Length: 141
Image (cartoon, rainbow, N blue to C red; front, side, top):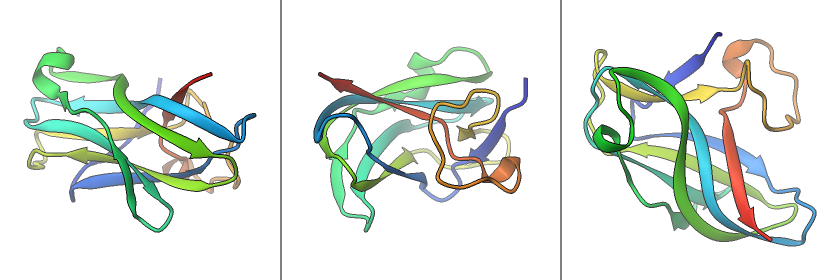
C-alpha cells in the first residue's frame, strides 16, 4: 500500500469539489476524510465547508486527536459532523484545519487518493502528488 500525504503546515489544507448529486439539493450531515497521524500531534481537527470564493458556510465538530485515534502512526477515515444543504452544480471548498502547531516530528496530514479512489476527477493528474485529497460526503435522503 502506498499513501501520499500533505502535512497541515499553515493552518489548513483545501480541496475543491463540485456537487453533482442526483437531487437538486442535498442535506449533508457529515464528511469523512482519509487522514494521517504522524507521532503525537496536539490540538484538534475540524473541517470547514466554504464557497469557491472562500466564504464560510459551515464548520464541523472538532475531533480530539488523542482520544479518537490510537497509536503513534495511523491513517484512515475520520468522520466530522457537518450539516449543510448542497446545491447541484455548485463548487465548494472542504478545508481540514488543525488547531495544533506543526513540527517535523509531530503532525497531522490529509491523504491523497491513490490506492483508494472515491471521487471522479475533471482532470488527469500528471503524477501522484497531483491526485485530489480523499474525502466522502454523507447525505440524508
